[in-house]
Image (cartoon, rainbow, N blue to C red; front, side, top):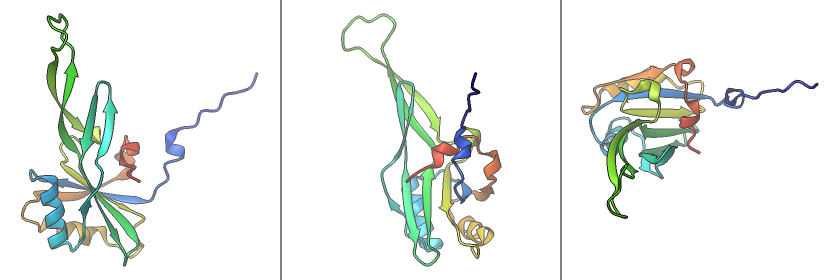
Length: 162
């Protein structure tokens, strides 16, 4: 008999990135605008990150920025969205009746209270994450920001944007 070898997703996910959590009740486009203004980035809206869960699809807003000087990519992504699941009622009176259920979805379920994430891919060695976070904290719309330890992220596959 031959032994079966199981390959885990974590074996392939060796991406070098930093992750910053942001707490703010402002809309995603306002956060991107304020980051561009205060931190001197150039975030722009790209295709949303979509996630399929059972009968629903959640769309998380995504903004990207490529820093030419530091040669790294930045991604601003929403962590929370409200979406609607359409379920047929148990007893249908009509062919066209549908029950709509409102659902809260999170991109990283282990961080349900975080509103946004900034992912910095392949940061240079001279990049200071603490200085970056301090600049973010100065933005009036942002309540707080802090770095997330990658070892605590259970759903890293949700952070693949390219």
